[in-house]
Amino acid sequence: MKNITQDFGNLYHPTNALVFYQTDERNRETYVEYFDMDKNGNPINAHPLTEREAEILAKALTVKTKKEKSQEFLKPKGILPTTILHINPNAENGYVMWYTKSMKRQMFFTENLEIPNGTAEIPAMLWLATQRSLKIFALANNRRPTEKTTLYYAPFFNVYENGNVCMGTVDVNIQKSSSVEEFMEKWEDYFFNSYFSHLMNEHNPINGNCVNLWKGLINADKNFPKDALKKANRTLKTLLK
Image 1: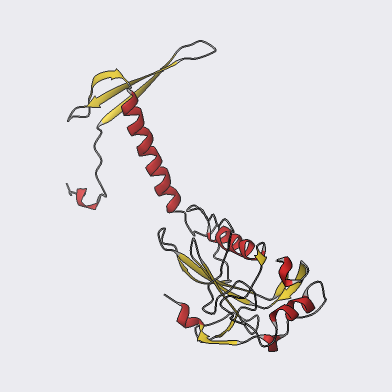
Image 2: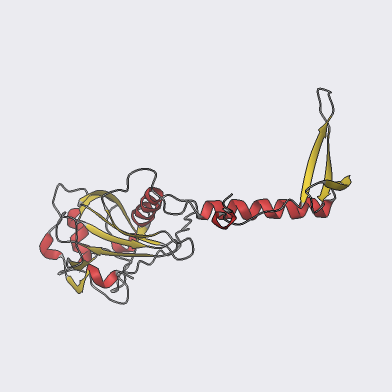
């Protein structure tokens, strides 16, 4: 007979067992008995489940639950969306790179900018996000970008010259169990549902005046002016890790 034990994964041995007893009454009472297991897998040393043993069991189940959730991080719900350009599903330092086409978005501004809240057309965008940080750039058109695609500065307030987004007081809460679709949707919502307030380190991301640009676009039936985009002197490939 062929020995196939080497083809097995980890081998687990029974060490403990729990038996639950309940009364037959309508308001059932439960009693839990704890057993150790001998080397042959037979239950021995029966005794009521102690508080310490219950705590150990609860901790073991919690660790398993967290591990299972982390394994779901950035997994697609179905077919991988075509807007995704690169994905690293690692639970500790995973990230996603995706793009969005030009579209109308609701935008919010702080009072000091004197720009009304409302909808405006935004350019196509490139997004790169981890569980806790976001980097964005603009694209010249709606075509799917490649490694050689030229990037432009994202024409928004609150964005540093290197593309990093200052989220301010936004409570970013991306769960380890988030699918890749949920992950992208949450980051887009976090960005556009926060208030645009100021330029970062005096970095002007457009050709022209950023305040006047958005004053002219908000609640107006206008296309985003492509000539306002300023080249970032980098390509998509430079963002790949």
